[in-house]
Image (cartoon, rainbow over all chains, first blue to last red):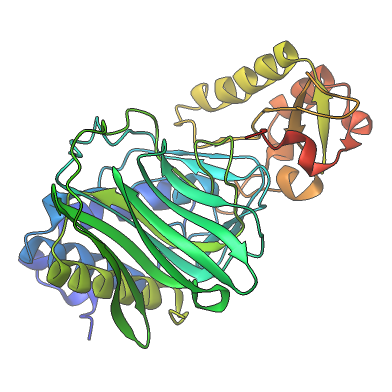
Length: 266
Length: 99
C-alpha cells in the first residue's frame, strides 16, 4: 500500500523523486498524487535495498508527452525520440520502421563493465513484426528477438556473450531482464503477473568484448536496424544484479508501472 | 510510409533547424523526426524524413502539449522540404539497411 504523498513526513519524501516529478511536470506531464506516491515509493525502495546506485538509466515513458517521456528517472538527463513513435497512456510504441528512442548515454560512459551489467524492458504488448528486432547498444550489449519461425521467437540477451531463450510470440510480454554479475555468470529473466522465471543462463566466461561506447537505443538497434513496434512501458540499464535482486527489482518496476498507469502487467 | 524525400544535405539542415528550435527555448533535444537513408528504389541515395499526420501531431512538450505543427519554425522548415504537398508515400522496405 502506498502512503499519501501529501501526508508523508518531510523526512520520508525522497528528493530524487521530487526532482524527477518536477522535471516531467515542467515538460508537460500531468502527475497525480497517487503517481507521486508510487514514484516516491519506488525510489525509496531501491535506495533501501541498496540497488539505487546500480541503476544507471531508467525510463518510464508513460506520460503521453515526448519531452516528459524522454527524461531519465535516475539521471534526469533527456534522451531523444526519433521518427514515428506513439506516446500512449502508459507506454511508447515505435512504428516498426523509423521510431526509436536514443538514450543520451553509452554503457561505457555509465560505468557498465564486462563483469557487471544489467538491462531491462517492460513489454505491455508484444511486437507484430517478423523481422529481427533489438534494443541495445551495438551488438555486444542488447536484447534481440530473432528467428520469427512459426509462433516462436528467440529472445537473446547479449551481454558480451549471448544468453538465449525461445518462447512463444504471445509470451513475449512482461519485464525482460538480462544480468551479468561475473565473467562466467549471465542470466536472462522474465517477470509476468503470473510470476518470475529464469529463462536462460550462460556460464561461458567472456570478458574480451569491449563494453559498447555507442548510445543505447530502445525500439531499435542504433536507430538503423531492428525496429520493432512493441508497446514499452519502461526500459533501462545498470550494473549487474543477482537473481534475487533481479526478482525484487522487476517486482518493484511492475508495482511502479501498474500503480502509475492502472494497467496490468501481462 | 509518408514523408519527405530530399538530399541528405537538406535533411541535415532541417534536423539542425529542429534542434535549434529546442535550443532557442532552453530545452534538451528530446525529439527529432529523423532522417533515414533510402537504400533502394527510385529514391535510392536520398534521405527520408517521416512526416505523416501522426508524426506531425506528436505531443512534444507542455500541458496541453504542443505538436510540431504548433511551432513557429514549422512553416520555415517545411518550406525547405518543399511544402506539405511535397510529401510522398514510399515503400518502408527501401529504408531498411541491407544486412
